[in-house]
Length: 383
Image (cartoon, rainbow, N blue to C red; front, side, top):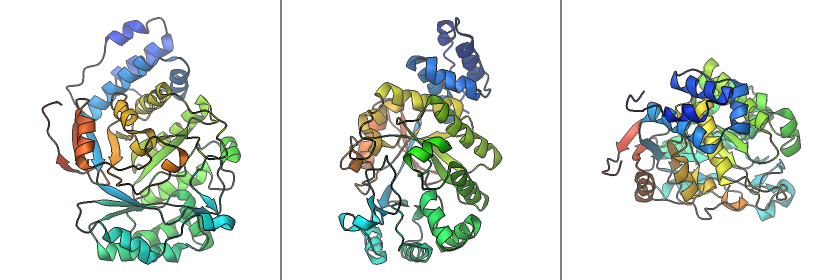
């Protein structure tokens, strides 16, 4: 904990008339856990300044002024997918796969080799669920990447991809994960979580892994020594109660097993998908989601704003609302959000650009590895 963080006492007077908000503020002050009912009340009734002040205080206590990033790039093996999720602008159906892309192992290894003379520390591998890209295929890929560059952290595959691969191979989650771990996989991303509620999933992504299955996959990974991230897709048909239920399942899992590196709220973008008729939530709602996540998820050290999805300016703003991680340099290697109409159509930032973004709001940039070991602290006069 950072003892330089000072609780914003003035906010207590502003909510003296509201017993629930007063309770939340006092719980934060005394490092007590808020309830799910209080969390939902924050979404319904708290203003942005209130949750922002609490979130910023909590973050300062946990992380000081440090904001993390890593030097990473993505490999997206294919956007051909057997599933049809209503919110997805990225995938192409298997029947119409000529409109998508399918990379072979050598092609993906060539992408890795492009970074041979660069100080990247992580490759992030995610894509569609392609019936011909099975467990054997991806284990061979992992082995070849690891043999070529053993210092590169291999983070890959959403629970949706893994569930399909393991079921097809007739393996349990543990058996499949142990095999991939042996091949070189070191951690899991947080994709595929969407909203855990069964009713919402039935409407937006009916055929893929359940919320319970997602939790089981990640807890199994944690038990065998592979950490992961956690995500939540917000701003579509879900209610505040659905968001709270989702975060509560993550909080309970972290209590049980541990292993989550960070929480990443992902904003629904409505470009070119089957939910394009829905409007996108405001930037005020975006900031409230980040701030409330920081308040509620007291057992998560890190809250990440994925800047290619939000855009640079909005991601920078989250640093005042409890966020302490901006992901990484990316280097224009992901299309998942650009194809949905995100602010960043060519997502790439240099280390210098990321540092400038962070120092401009008085924070200290810190390069990290994939499991939050600090590699370099960029001391600044502004911070």
